[in-house]
Length: 215
Image (cartoon, rainbow, N blue to C red; front, side, top):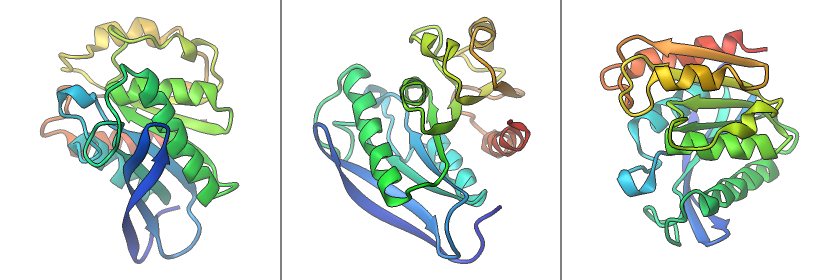
């Protein structure tokens, strides 16, 4: 299924555990979505926001595939209240955003995605929320963050990794990925750096192919 016809991009302020969360929701006007996707941005202390180019491309691609997509700013970023909380509070921000999405679209299949720091948040959220059916991780920082929850989490996992990622190298990902519970799938983008510079088109293609091939 794909989004056909008109599309809405709506700016929102969601209730979060530390105060309002700034968010953007994109939906199709043509009918109910095939799924609802929450997309988490990279590290707040290093310029990560909901407008990050990788986050934007992932959300846009998921929307093109028929999904309603919600991206949001973690606490202390942009118009979101609060202060950076080293991943603990950010997980609860994501949980609040997911709860809002579930309430808006009850009964809709749920997908959670994240890039870099956002991948760490997304992984822990999906592992702790049985309603999440698919997890998409872009450049997960396995060398600096704990992803052991995925060793037992049954959620379907798609990982997209650049082969030239200097921040989260493929050499660190591969042995960790091998320990994660099935179903899991790894898509690589040849020559792509951590931020997929000049490779955003290839990122979108890998996302499409990975989801098409997922169980």
